[in-house]
Image (cartoon, rainbow, N blue to C red):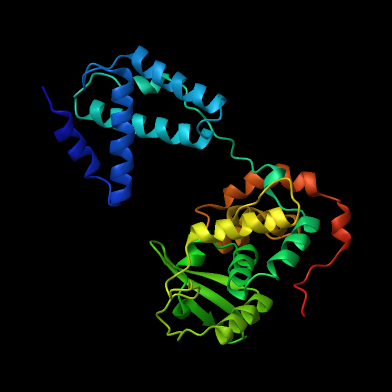
Length: 294
């Protein structure tokens, strides 16, 4: 009989990232520990029981829907592999409903202009580095990881003085535009910093001269939301959601937003349709926004 370690090793060899292999191995072993069965003795009832267990954890808010969806996909993928290689006769997960995360971005994940104005006012009282990085995430739609990994040599200027950030992807070079006010802010941060900023250095550094951590930036925005008196603490990701929603609402095409935010496909803009309808014809439409200068 095939040994689970040997089969798992062969299955995981298809993945390039070590983290992906670790996640799959951990989650597959959790499945086998839960059903308490030998490797190839898994039945339809075992699979169904485990997915029901995940759904129960979702209902109790012990795990996110997206986590349950990911765990199902991992199991489906592994059992598909077992079926293809004739270790089992049938992948039982084909007959089991996948827990589905909503693809819509709800309006409570979009920061209103009133809240955004309050949040910016609080952030401006913090150090210029933290203010700069969060405003860059909001105005350029970077992921938090993109922002903390950003290096000076990624900034580019075109022949019309537009500032952009260059990212190398598997599909080629991607450019993300930087708002002029935010570029000025980043330049001010650079001038006030005591660090030597070489092209290959990270842009945003901590007090030890190392790149800033994503955990610290999540802490900063949570603290700012608390100081602003919000009922909800927003995250850097919700700054990104806010940019996407308002850009689409103001007339940007799905393709333009896709390019700016680095989405895999323009159809992802459909996630914001509900939110855009909720925000349409709002009192805030009569206000103009720009970053206040001191």
